[in-house]
Length: 281
Image (tube, rainbow, N blue to C red; front, top):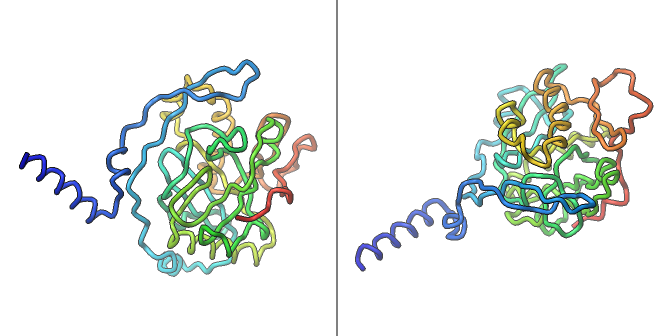
């Protein structure tokens, strides 16, 4: 009995020191396979990776300090990448002709499995390429601050996917959004707001299931979503090689990634702003 009491005391002491919840510690399990319903007329079943609940520790290095060291001021063009499995949010900024990694943030919370969002209410975080515009900004969100990524985009609509109000926001709870915690969203929001004020354009947000290395792709070669991920990998590889975000469009049921400034194929429709999807929360 004394051993049990000592063990429980040590667990709660660790929780107190780390700031983690009992739930996050007890439910911290390895990735495992589970079934989920795929978007198919024949209701074909597929496997997806369930995401573990992890203790959250923000990246405490001030972005202001990083920008000063790189001699960068807020207002430069930005590019955002999100990796679901690794729970990483990357903020890139243009420096010269190429983009440099400004800061990598741990994602506090998001819901669902590896794979795209399919329908309203499935509590699934999406995958694909989305955009932030001036109308994406919500400084009065109940989640502290929020950025609407404008799901569904044209690709999603072509696949008959539904839903809306998918945000990058503060706090640490999620039902399909990406919750960054308050201190981190303050840095991200400020950079996005300054960039959009200066350039009056949009910022791409590329959301991937995982870092799309050849090793990771091989690991998921049997997944139902492999063809979709292979399509996304084209854009991932382009940026990895050039550090310049590619122009992203949609042709039928496929993403198309092209060099910026090149002649855009007239059959390719750009990822455009969908004003119907901008109701804030």
